[in-house]
Amino acid sequence: MANENPTDRRPSDPCPPAVQDRKTERAVLVLLLDEHPARLTTDELILVLHADPERGDPEDAGQRAVRQLVGAGLIHREGRFLAPSRAALYFAALEVS
Image 1 (tube, one colour):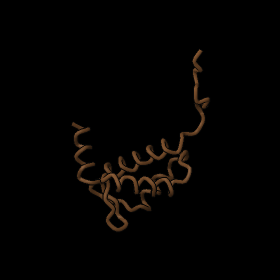
Image 2 (cartoon, helix red, strand yellow):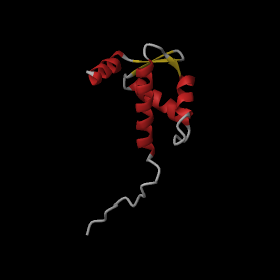
Image 3 (tube, helix red, strand yellow):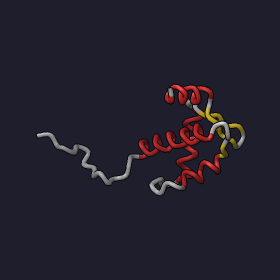
């Protein structure tokens, strides 16, 4: 008989780090899209992430998310300012339509 919970994780177990990182990346991108055309600094972004008590280390998580999103071409870093890329804005417009 198949085990109903093959990973033996309880529902209250914390998310694996990769899943939490994806959630943070999503939160960062959504925030930047919502605030567009205003640009946020990395420090402002970290302050918003601090509002989520489930996020272990918001500063580290935010920095990782920014690195990933910049690498994927979804956000631009201009000095200390962050803004969504044209591709991200285009995609967001498709989602609204």
